[in-house]
Length: 50
Image (cartoon, rainbow, N blue to C red; front, top):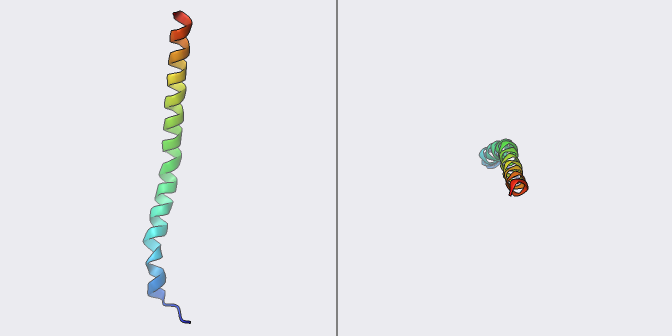
């Protein structure tokens, strides 16, 4: 069985894309959590005043 360097080079763009997605996932998750907390705070203050 022989392995070619060119065959492994096909994986480089995939690994780079995966790394970029992993980096983008963290801020996106933080934005979702912040939005959920804001919505929760908004509903809890509106129900407290009603």
